[in-house]
Amino acid sequence: MTLPVQPFPWEAVLLALFLLLFWLAWGRIRRRRAFAPLAAVAAFPQLATEQRVTGTVRRTLRDPNQGVWLITVDVNRSRFTFCATDYERQSERYESLLGKKADIALFALATLAPGGVEAMKHQIKNIDKIEMRPDLVTLTQAGEFPNDYAVIARVLSARHDAWEEMALTVYRAQVVRQNDLTLVIDLAVAENSAAVFAPQTMVHGSARLFGYLAS
Image (cartoon, rainbow, N blue to C red; front, side, top):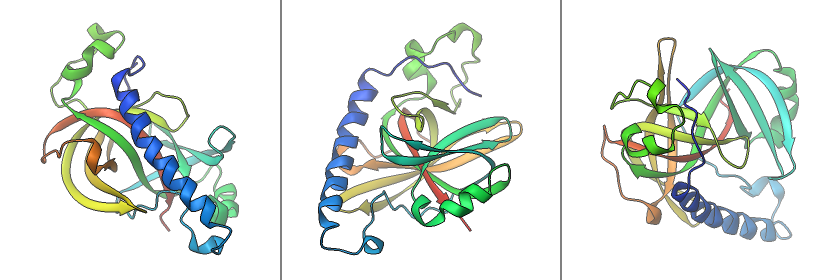
């Protein structure tokens, strides 16, 4: 299920703060490129994830605003756009996969707050047409860039990780539950920007999708 979501006011502020840390870390990496081989530099968030999605690759697009390559995949009746962290070394494979199925390791940098659909119902258009189940989850495109999404999720588990100097809490979370599709991905949150959520907690917020070819 996809929901028409109005712009997030305070979630956008949280996402801006998190992405500021993201760009600061990226800036340090780019400055080091004069002294380190490109192959040794992690220019994108490098999050090892076991979560996979199988979809048909529909489009590859260079986003000039972010300076990254975006990939759009169709998964059953849903469509997702993510930043390909491996595009520079896998560009030929991505082009050869257009119109074909591929296994993608999908994850997101996110800002999350407690509460599911009830906590954000004032931000959803046509709320009267939506079945307000307390366990409702959704991943809906919304935000500044094509790979920005509004998310309502159910936390399944959590672990600690890091990207460069940034400590992360990574939540394995269910973000789509439909008759023909259940999607679980990793949502990485800066540890100093949010509370820790226990399994089965409903959360909502903003997510920027990243991914790479899983095989």
